[in-house]
Image (cartoon, rainbow, N blue to C red; front, side, top):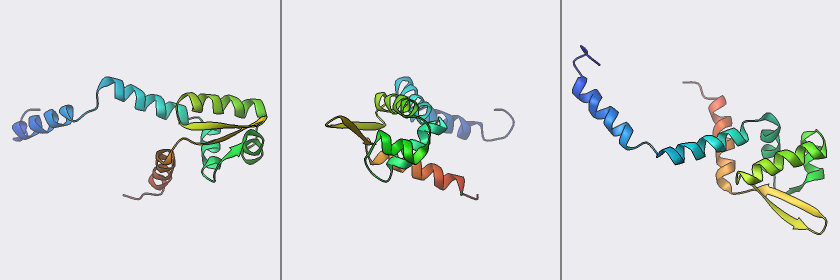
Length: 116
């Protein structure tokens, strides 16, 4: 920047921002996380799982779609560490991996209603 009279202050602020930025690997991992939850069908599944553990059949009933499509989305989210699975006989029950997933969903919804 030139001519604003605050060049030194801006340079210090930019350096601080650069020094406090996560590394490239962490940025890539966060990006992959958002990519994994950005598909609308996956988001519906996550919102359904906020209520607690569900088997695939109950998830299909809650969000619509087919069992194969829901299973496919669950596999993607499981690989990304967003959901976890627990085998119960012939059924597999899914739940959110941890409370951070709930926090991300709630923050996103809060952001939608934020009026700055």
